[in-house]
Length: 540
Image (tube, rainbow, N blue to C red; front, side, top):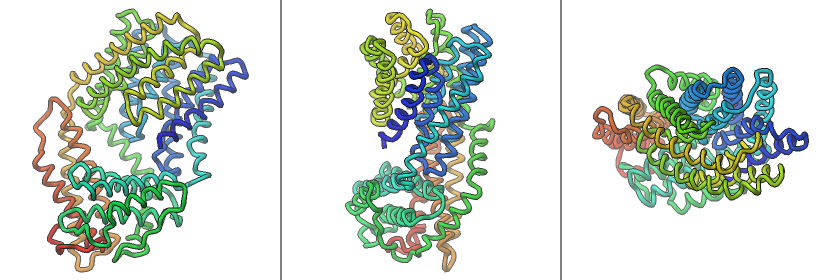
């Protein structure tokens, strides 16, 4: 689905840019671009959730820009502006992680708000500039939701297809990694379907396909027989995935033996989630922002690293060190190991991207339309490439970001390119230093909490299984709860394993909990008839 955000950001940017060109006010592009970039978010969400999520992104962008523009209008002190930029970067990192908004994450917010900090601004201009951000953001909201008029179940179809493909990969090559990928994909598909709104014939068919993906997945666990007719083979799963992802009708498989047309009470669960979904989302956000949250150390890294990047860049003679702040902010991932890997890719991509910028800069200065065309081209290329290869995507991101600044005025090419190279190196080095200095010993605490959640979810499932005739609705809810807790446990374990200084990790307990949890998942599927058991429920 790489072309969806890529096309969305081109449409969301082209219309305001061409309108400003017609009005001879291209100096205002930086403000409309802030709203246009909101079109990058929410493409993996069902449209009902996407509407709320992108609206939240637009509101957050307006608030961030308001802080930057007011700060820029009140002070010309570079030191103060760097401090504001670092605080904004840390807050944006924390909010994006807590809300789980997904890619492209906080880096878009940080790029736009940091650049606005170092641009000329008067206090009286701020309301008008914020109105431009809001107007472009509203147009981006419309752009991201327009595909619903053509295929309203598109996100759910893609999530279901990913679950089918992952289950097929696990059936072909059973193992720890493929199993986790499949479980996570099935869990994501159920989340998309449960949040998609009222049931339709297409969503009913998608629900059955996910049930069959679960059947194939469970058939590979101890206690399941993957050769039974109820557990479809990998070729059939891939065929279903291909047809589900395409534009034709969704395949409608027969109900798995022993299942009901009501699909284990999913309607009741959907209604409950729709009723309490926003409340639960607020609770999850507050948990992420709470004093004991494991997300706080990563946000602290962003604060320290971005501040160091800005001040070192200032000391090196860069007049507008926003690019050093953005480079540092883009590095911070779930742990130090991932941040180190991101730093290498970002540095390579940015340095090559600066060379590309130097090559296209003369062309972009031929005319305003040429500048608009270059920005749109690199915006599309960046989104088309970055999900496949981060450093290659960064090669396109860099000239796009630097060309946007050309709308506000031209600078000597040599000075501009030299500053960006220096900012890239400084931002990457100080960003990594911040990651090393600010340790995240809370990662172990998150892992221990996830381990306890798995034990509770498994005990709940075992209790449901112990009934002489367990209710399908209870088993279905228990299975989804256990699946979610296993996904969280794997993510917490991966994050904790990449930290360089922390308490000892309970690795043996995690492995035992995962094995027991997956056996219980297979047992719940057995009792619901998703596949014929090779053994009775002793796998619990």
